[in-house]
Length: 313
Image (cartoon, rainbow, N blue to C red; front, side, top):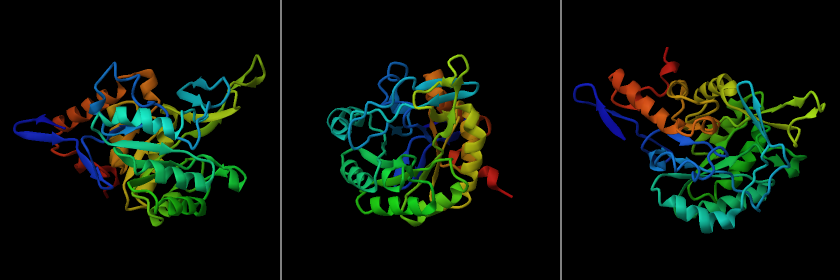
């Protein structure tokens, strides 16, 4: 995508990484956009840099019991529980529809054992139209006492190494912030064959109903997202971008073009927009337009010129 910028200057939002080309660096975030059906009535989904869809698990899941969403002062808690119709429905009914958009499609894969990750990657990465597999490493690993797959570098390395041989497209682990050293996790992913990393997933949080004297969420705890997590996410993206040579996709509290610019300047090659979509269904196209305008006003011809700009000096 390009526009006139100043006198004779064209401002391009296009980025390339992991063997893929994107018309702009603004993607949807898994779990917050479905597969785009609800948003197609508001804007043309072909404006997305990439469509990152809802998680696909080895078997259909109904998700957690209610209550599954709770507002917080600067965001939300969710405990949806990976509700999805499973890989067969995805391949037969969902993928053919979204493939017609003609934009890169990333499939978020969630599983509960190493073998399930391997099987899903092998199945979904070969489907026509799938550009990348985003490995959700925040799932509880039943083989390790239900600790997250990204609990330590060894667990990340084991999972990525197992999935790499069967994954026939780009492999992008999605890292959790619920760790003491996210850069170490990203480095382990890179060493094990990841093409890029995306971060962050949600922070673990909870809310309590003081009248009922019980946790608000049916699952007791949930994932915190929205503006409240942005400073944490931005810091982690900055750290990881300085620790690995593979591209970083920034996620966490991005609600406007200024937020997106901060992540890009911190070293992210692209960003994903999640919770903001619930508040403003036009968030993504407005962010794309805002980036275009900022480049034009600053006489910058290519958005790649500002990626990592905050790291100089």
